[in-house]
Image (cartoon, rainbow, N blue to C red; front, side, top):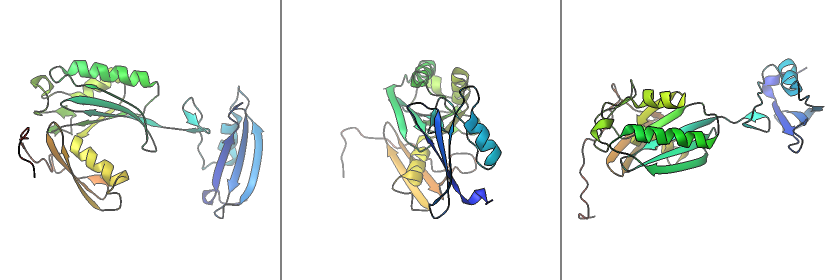
Length: 239
């Protein structure tokens, strides 16, 4: 008898047959203190039953996206820019498994939404939800693109979260593109060891983001750190 919360449970699957499982209980000194080999009945997932009965603090699921018996969760990341739209399949380890890019239809949001839907369908994985990166200004509370100068007027006051959720059947979350670029650097990039991270993006337009203690600083209405309109002079002076 021991406290299961202090132990690591490792499940090893013989992948050639997917029927033989080895379960090891390892203590904090990395010593194996218990082990069991068992076979999975194809009509009754004995591994799940075993863990449910004998390891009540360990929840295990098994489905078509599982790796070593543990579910790998996926999310869809979308960056809608004034020139290109990028769609990626991201796993829970922040790794890009697939990525597609196509030209944004800056005059017709429906064309871009439909291409996004087809791209997600081609990935062939069940995702938990969708996160959209888009140039501001945005209504983050209601999921609207407001009057971004990078996109045509048909995109203005456009309910992007509602429309994409209707097209895909997934929950959709919207955030400013510079904010998300800043968050990525703050969580897994060069800024991960710092409490305050500021980021500037220069693309079709210029944007800025601020992350404090791994959280985006949005301000009272979601417009914090918007640096207004900054013109870019093509072939202008550099310094």
